[in-house]
Structure formats: structure tokens, C-alpha cells
Length: 206
Image 1 (cartoon, rainbow, N blue to C red):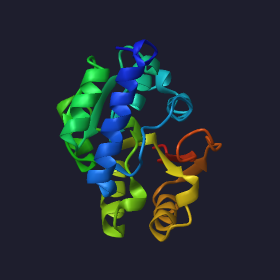
Image 2 (cartoon, one colour):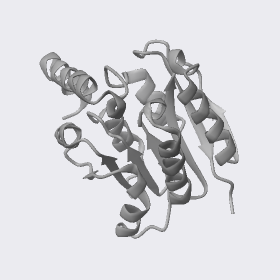
Image 3 (cartoon, rainbow, N blue to C red):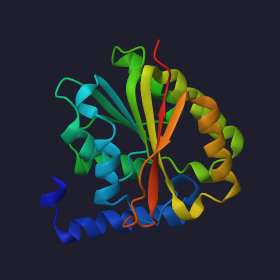
Image 4 (cartoon, rainbow, N blue to C red):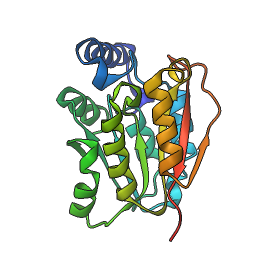
């Protein structure tokens, strides 16, 4: 089912499911609503998905970014999503039946890539709630992500404008600049709730 074909009732159901998981697991969900159309579109547009052979999504949630990735990646590119919440795994599969979605942690990206015959990937697109993670968890996950990227590969993740002053969000930003060879930020998507921007982090080419 494509987003454009979804009924208002279906969209409301997805939003309520997301909000419920935020209430139950705020440190794992990180937002009260899924990313909106403009943020999902920007995230996947600046990823240049039609030019790469492998894409991994971390934290698919209800599948709003998953759907965009499927629309924009090249037909032959390997793609799968990792989502730790079983309810969100179900929601993503329902929204995107053609997607490969594993109930698994982001730290297992390299393991799943190996299963698909890849030693690394070209793009990692993340919706993980970084500002809710402890410093050591941020560090561990970023190490796993960096190791899973091919030389010249890019890691994209978004952050909320209002939360950037929080100590954990500021520490995460510093970790990104320390870990990756090139870090850029996108324009702010003010229509998202909350308003957000995207980090584009590149691993140095070989």
C-alpha cells in the first residue's frame, strides 16, 4: 500500500501506534509522531539512492522512510531495514510488504550485510533517537555504523532543532564530527513535528 493510497483512518492508526510506543518506550521511540512527508523526502533525496548498490535503514518505525527508500533506490540495490520494536516491524511490513525488515538492533548491520553478500554498504539511513541514548551507547552504535559503511559511504540521521541544546544531543553532534571525515547539515524542515534537520556524514574514500 502506497502512502498516497492510504485512507485517513490508516494514517491515524499509524500515528496512534507511534504515539503509544513513545509513551511506553520514550527512550526507544524518541518522537511523538512519525517523520512527515517533507523530512522523509529530503532524507532520501540527499542520499542519492539511485546511485548506490546497498542501503540499510536503522529504526524503520512505521515505515514512512522505508517507503521513500523503496521508491528511490535503484532496482538492483540491496536494501533492508533493522527495527528493534516488534510492533514497528509489523507496521513497516504492513506499509511496505516488499521490504525486508529484521527485528534486530542497529549494531547488527554488518552481520545482516554479510548475510546479503556484502562486506559493507553505501548508505545507512537512521531514525534512531540518538539524544535519548547514553554516551557509551551512542559511541558503540556509531562504531558499528562506521565499520559497516564502505569507503566513501554516507550515514544520514536527523535531529530535532529544539533538542540540539540538550547535553546528550550536543555530545552526539561532537561524536559525529570526531568519527566521520566529512559532516554536513541539511536545511531545517520546519513543518515536521518537531522541526528537524539532517546530518550527512561521510566515511573517507579508500
